[in-house]
Amino acid sequence: MKYALIILLWICATTTQSFAQKWNTDFEKAKAEAMQTDRPILLVFQGSDWCAPCIKLEREVWNSPEFADYAKGNLVLLKADFPKRKKNALPKAQQEHNKLLAERYNKNGHFPLVVVLDKNGKTIRSFGYKKVSAKEYIKLIEGGKP
Image 1: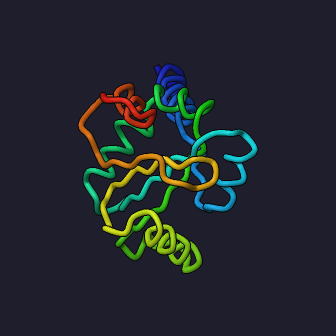
Image 2: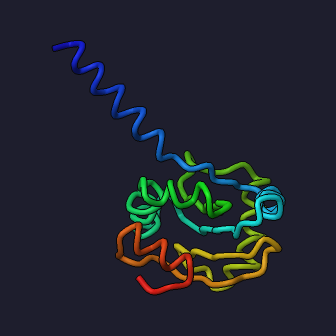
Image 3: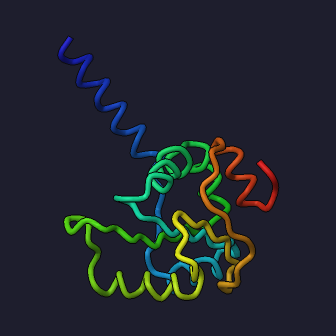
C-alpha cells in the first residue's frame, strides 16, 4: 500500500511537470528566439496573485496538455507578471522591464491581456480572458473564433 501511494505521487508529480511551459521573462531574449525559430511571441500580462481571471487562464489554458503541445512547436512564450503581495514581489529590474512592456503593449492596464506579436515585436492581435477550453483558446491565438 505504501509503495502504491509513492508511485501514485511520483506519477502525479511527473505528469504535472511535463505540462510546465518554458516562459521567458525577458523581451529581448524572446524576440531573439522568435527570430531564430520564425515563431510568433505570445505575451501575457498577468497579476499572478490577485487577478482571478489570470489565475483561471493559467490553470485552465497555460497549464493544459493541449496548450503545452501546441506551444512547443508554434510559439515563443513571454510573461509579464505584476504581483501585488510582498512575498511574490519580483526583482526591481524585472518590475521595470515589465512596466516598460506594459507601456508599449498594455497601455490600458488590462489583466489578463494576451498579445500575439510577430517575430519583430509588432502586435498581431490581443484579447483577454475567455471562458473557453484550451483548444478553443488556441484558435483565438491563431486568429480564429473559439
